[in-house]
Structures are given as C-alpha cells and as structure tokens.
Amino acid sequence: MSSSPKPWSFSTYTDADGRTYVYGYRNRWDPEKKQSRIEKRCHVGRLDPQTGQVHLGRKFLTNNPEYAGKFWLYDNNQLIEQEPFEQPDTDNEPQPSWRGEDVELGLTWAAWQFAVDHGLLEDLQETFGEDTGTELLRFAIYRLCGEDSGMMNYADWLALVWLPQAQPLSSQRISEQLAVVDQSLMDRYFKRRHDRLLKARKKVSAADIPQFLALDSTSISTYSETIASAAYGHARQDPHLRQLNLSLGVDYETGDVCYAYESEGSTNDKQLYLAIVQRMIDHQFDLSNTVLVTDRGYHSLMNMQKLINLELKFVQGVTRAEDSVRRLFDQHRVSLDDPAFTDGRLEVAAYTTTEMWQEDSAAGRQHIHNTLHLYQDGCLRAEQKRVFLKNLDETIDRLNQGKKVDSEQLREMHRYLVKKEP
Image 1 (cartoon, rainbow, N blue to C red):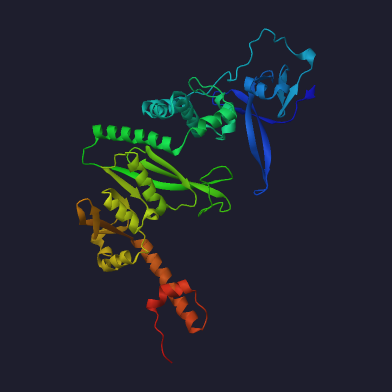
Image 2 (cartoon, helix red, strand yellow):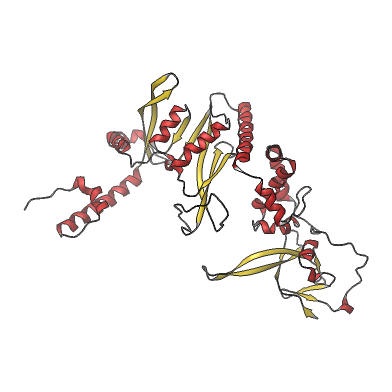
C-alpha cells in the first residue's frame, strides 16, 4: 500500500443523520497571529465506516485527477491507495456525481422559500435578469448558511446541500456574475423592495402611522488593491488596511433592508447622510410617510437644515458637544432631576422642548418648530459627577504644586477655578 499525493490534508465530519464525509484542507501560516489557519477546504467524498472506503466526488476528481481510477481507504487522516489486485471491479458502476449522495435540505430550503415568499427572488430577477438574479440569491444563501463563506469554496459547499437547479460554477463565472452588480442596479433593486414594503404596510397599518427607516454604516477592511472605493479612513480595527463603507437602510418594523449604499472608506457619516438621502430621492423612493432614524454620528446643522428644506421627517441623535444643547440641559436641570420626569424602570429622565428653525420652500422662508428630546441617565450622571469632582481636586492640587496640567483638562475645569492672590 502507498500513501496518497499530498497537496491536501484530510479529516472527517459527521452530519446530524450520522453520515460521515471526508474533506480536504490546506493550511497557511499567519505571521501576525503566529498560528496555522485553514486557507482552503474542499469536499472529498463520503466515507463507508464499515469498509473504510472513500467514494470520491466528481468535483474533487475533476480538480485532482491524480486520485482518479484508484481505490482509496481513509485511515489516520490519510487517503491510502490499495494495490491493483485489491481493487474491485467498478466498470459497471455509475460515475460519481458532483453532488454528494446525501444532501442537507432544511436550512437552504427554508432560506430559499423565505426569499420566494417575500418577493426577494422576483425582485432580483426583475432587476438583474432571471439567470443572474437567481444566481445572486444562491450566492446570498451560501454566504448566510455556509461554514466558510469564501466564494472559492462555493462549489464544494453546493455539493452537500439542496438548492433548486443549482450547478457548480468556476471562479471566473462567479466573478462575472458578481461584476454585474453596481450601485445603479442596487438602487433599482432596493426601490422595488421599498415599494413592496410600503404596499404591504398599507394593508395592515393605519395611513397616519409612518414607516421608521433606520440608517447606519459600517466599515469593512480589505487587502484588495482593485476595489476603487477602498480608502484609508477612521478604522477602529486594522487601521493599516484600506476600507470601504457599507450603509444600510433597515425598516424598524420588519427588519427588511430597504436600501444599501457603498462608498469610499474615508467618507464619514455626516458626509454620507445627504448623499444617501438625495440618491433615494433621485431614484423616486417614496419618503413622504417615512421617518429617517440616525444616531448622533450623522448629525450636523447643515444636514438638519437640508432635511427640513426637503420636508422630510426624521429622528436624529444630537451630540451634547453643541453649546446650544448644553444650555438646554442647564436650563431644564431642575426638571431632569425631578422624579416626575423620570421613568423608574429605565432610570432615565426625559424632557421635551422645541427649537425654532427656518424652512426654505417654494413659497418662501417659513418658521417651523422642531421637537428636541433631552434624556438623562441618573446613574450615569452621578458617576460622571463623581469622576469630574475627583479630576477637579487633582487639577487644583497640581496647580497649587506648580505642576503642568493637561490643556484639555484645564479647559474643562477653568470655569470652576479661581486664582487666589498671595
């Protein structure tokens, strides 16, 4: 007996029904984490636990022809080739299929049926064409359900699961399908998704109840040198890598993604906000009864003024760094400390006030009132006060000792400091 060729290392796994499969993998050394990591894996075939024979899959044989025409046993994480006199007569046996003898059905069936029932497949096919739209849904289910979501392993994963009328694709063909997707087609697709959602809401919600659409962004780091929108930005992780931004608009009630926008990694949320809103308007998204919800990272006076001029509804987080907001907290401090304004279960106090803004409309400049909600966490405020008083005492001590004080800390404390004349 002789050992198999060694481009792969081998191991096994057993599914929920007790079937055992052999898979191959290649390792690479990660110099940063100083450990070996799996670089690639593939489905090899099904293992007969009684005889130890491995029934190799067609995909594996196509990519690894040195294993073809031989009889292999699995032993001690190796494929062992039997000598010719030990090989059974397989002339009359059917050729192995690229798909495994047994496939997993439940998870991929549920994902596919969900996409059909909620119009995802129809919208993809209408936007990208029937073939490409269907393939994009298969790719999405792979990214959702596959253990290893690298597209290079798509065909190996496909051999083990059910997807209707699916066929393994070469890496080039996968790249060609994905290359079709651009921002313009994404806009068209999500316009269909948003229209479908609004139509469904009209059947179950009162006309005066608005849709709440949450907008948020995330940064994705990449090693790629070919992605045009990748740029160095304000990354919290992997700052040495370029990144791109992915912004999503998600319906609060259903969780449906109603919009997606890819942008350059160096663009911050304040700059993105108006670009996203204007792009949705340009593609005729119906935002007449939609409330745009964002956190304080999207807030700026210019953004608020633009939303007011566009007559859009919005809920927007506001940073306390603004002097006007600080003054309002000081002005309404008594109310915010009053138990009558506090939710005991949440331990949060709230006070609502209004601000006067001007709207530039076709009819001229008009005055409008914006509602501003002030929230105060009593426990957090008490802790911040304790830390502030401690820092104030330390600052006074350092000044009295003639020691240097950090300029930022001194700026924060200066209103509470009085210099005594000798």
